Image (cartoon, rainbow, N blue to C red; front, side, top):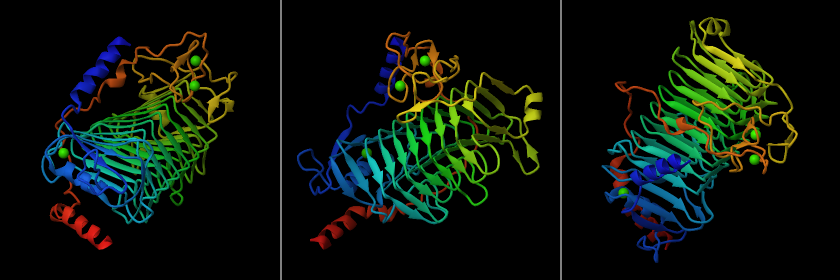
Length: 463
Ligand SMILES: [Ca+2]
Ligand SMILES: [Ca+2]
Ligand SMILES: [Ca+2]
């Protein structure tokens, strides 16, 4: 515990914003971005993107009727935090994307982008190459953290991806923590979210992903080439993958390639797919891919073709792959793995201690005190077990860890949140030297630099 604390302090020191400039924004602000005199949100974003400093943009409480907000530094910039204070809602009114953050053309190596305590609602985009109706973030190397945010009612229609959230980075790490995705839709990938890091670590933990709908990956789509993915301690329920005849991953679609994926202590329930993988679907088209699936409830999902609860796809065209698959201490009824005989022959498939039982839910997908899933999970050195369960109670209570996102807390039990989950902070195994494709930034630099002038004109016209 002490070591973790020290590690946390070290991390917070390296990304501290001691000298960051503070920018204050309010729903009706027209001031100079000071604490006393907050400014309009787009002015705040523009200032932060051109001042050459680290910034914290504080959003004062309230509803902001906004869309097509943009932060796109034309040259080198510092770190960025955008933080809501109190109840902050950015409402796109279904008239456009809410916020775009794009640091791809700037030198963003070692930089951090953090979005905290903000609700993104009613964003809308349409068209084949459009991504991220609520929030769009694109970096080359910068790390991205989304914390305590909510994405609701955002729509990516006509072949667009990422209803609530879209993130794309080459080597950056992505963390999505303690956030809610609800009733977002996309016609293509990722109803709730569509997040992609070629080499970095992608972590989704302590999130609620509910009633989202997408062509592929109704709740969310996650993709890496050689990075590490951790999907840990989330409640993922009632999402739908509904691509005509080809849905994959009602809850989650995970595309691993040669990456390493951990799916640990989640609750996947009542998700549906129009073809494969009701709860989740993994695409593993590389012999070096690794899928570690431990302590999950994958129950009462449905798929119209195969893999009612889960499906692992290892065959594409005439190619068949043998990724490493470990499937232990889960609760599911139906799990389909392509090319399984060969994978077993290669000694790359481990399956043990899985059960199939009614979880006995009470309240919001919590376990009854008599649930057969209590103390049926596994703890291993290489499993990134969280310290807390979905209620932020100790992750281990009584004998050992429970199956699913909830741990039933027994006050007199042997509770612990300091087990040796040392692998949580370690980064991916991916080596360097890989040539990465990069596309030009979609933002017209001249237009961006003219933003303050355009905002002035708009304000003038409004009177
Ligand atoms: Ca700045
Ligand atoms: Ca327990
Ligand atoms: Ca609990």
